Length: 120
Length: 107
Image (cartoon, rainbow over all chains, first blue to last red; front, side):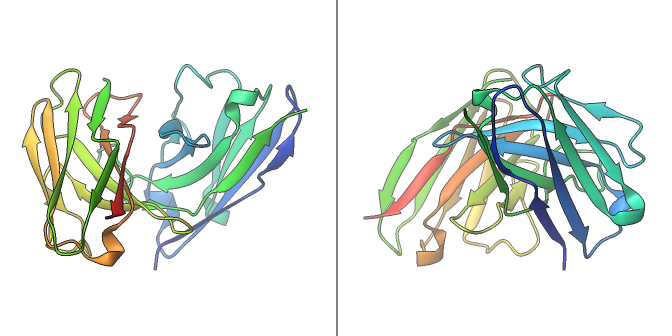
């Protein structure tokens, strides 16, 4: 059974950093692109980052480019999101998601999410 | 690509059928997915490629459309179907973009 479990969320002050983790199991992690998607309170879903199977290619929207870094450790079946220079608008539930093995950018499995609150 | 989803709120009774619309700001071929969001549960992929049911999606769900106009239809609503539904385009990326969501509630 595919499982994705995020951790690392919490309350952080504006301008500070936070690193999220996602533990994957039930599939060959190294074969799949992975992504982070977030949802601000009472808002819709927003794609945050995607990483290739080897980690050599990463993709970000303009809203987080230069502040967030996605990475992975295939040996540990783990995905990470380093978030720097956090802003109040980064307050959201962050989901780890798997892109299917076909080269299409939808997400076939999601984690339950971890909440990040950016506030002083 | 901007995705406009409607309605934002929908109330229906078990056994009824409902439809949710998703419109893209430009043609996205059939590169559209639908997801279901329920409290306390991971988001679930229902449909991809506009109309292909993901493994495990009940047959009462169907997707249609191509180009700019898409529809998610749920026939014979069951209690477990009351949730929030999102569309997502993946024709042009990055970024992939989502609709604003439709909350389906019990009437």
